[in-house]
Length: 71
Image 1 (tube, rainbow, N blue to C red):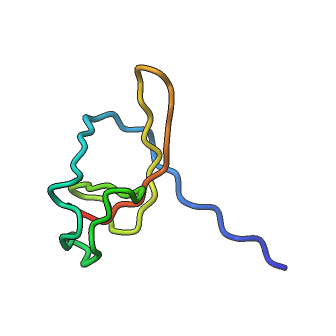
Image 2 (cartoon, helix red, strand yellow; image 1 turned 90 degrees about the vertical axis):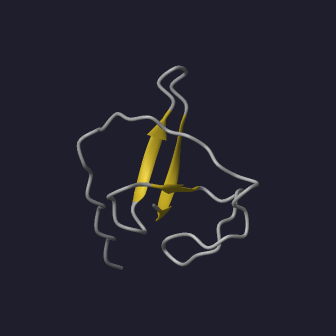
């Protein structure tokens, strides 16, 4: 069985995150998917759709991985 290729890893970036949910639930995202406020997805201005990103809360060190599907 062949090993899976390792994903590309970019240099860490710092920015500001925000949350949007109920008002957009069920609407179409920029990628064409239906927005699900419970799904681990995110919007980003420049990253390609389908990119996985680890988001870290710098206040407490907790992190999660989300997939970019919106602008």
